[in-house]
Image (cartoon, rainbow, N blue to C red; front, side, top):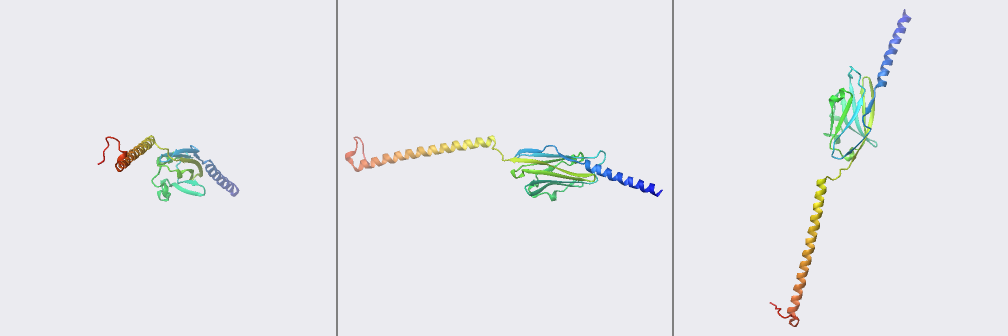
Length: 204
């Protein structure tokens, strides 16, 4: 009887261990897109998915999303037991990251990164920990410098045209005053040398 009870207990423990191992092994975090391209000052939405057991919401849910550039890591999104923890967010992301809380129930992490900067480029990694498994996945974001808008280009053209026009006017005025000075010099010379005066020319 003792042997049967011991065998049953061992089998039960082994079954529980196998179930736990299966749950942990089947938990996966994926990215919906491995790389993103965007322009500074624009907005972009990064998205991950993670395994959610049918009819069993996680007892606890911890998420860390970091920007990794070289050897530096900056936290942009932190969830603890389903609640967002903004206090641990890196200062450079303050007010620029919005997460969809409702999406977490569906096993999705959707992060909208606003007012992009070129220094936002890098690898974005999300680590998800639940009571039935943990995993992580990464994607890359490349933010390029903003190209001038059509309005900015038009203003540049206007400024160039106005500058060229002003330079031309200044050149014409210099030529005009130069001619006037030359005529004045000739008149002064003629007055000092009356013999060189043309007929009909008088000096005051």
